[in-house]
Length: 203
Image 1 (cartoon, one colour):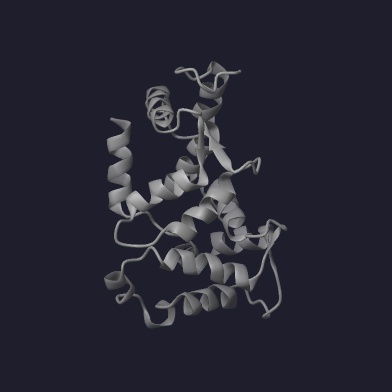
Image 2 (cartoon, helix red, strand yellow):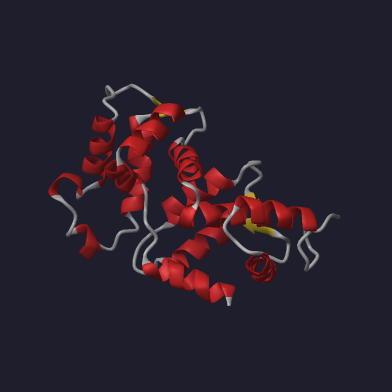
């Protein structure tokens, strides 16, 4: 049974989320109520998660990116996110501590979960990020990063890897911490409308 379907958060989970995220008790309780309203089972499926992303990006195609984000947060690989996984996802994608964020970014790019990142994996995630950038914004990008291929090439070149090499988690985190430009290339900054939408949900 547990507390999954009750309308109140368990004290243990509340304390854990308060200490591991930037959210207050009031915010977490509000999130929980709206989470249960949208997902009465206490779990959110991949399709529901993709739907939430789609509503944030009406003029783009976030499906592939949402799928990768979902995979990186489905910590027990059961095909759903519970409230804890969902809140951790929100926290890390909208402003977690740098190290936490980079550990998550590594998990996002490690598509097959084998503990290293290949050039193909970089290309796959960069392409999914590109799908979310509106066409008019893509046109404003610098010449050497205005396609997913060019952007992935730039990231790979920065790490100084040969075509079939792999990047370990340590190399990835150190490399990104040493070069803010790479951080900009590997992540998708949520546009203002996501932040506005999150504020609406909290109210």
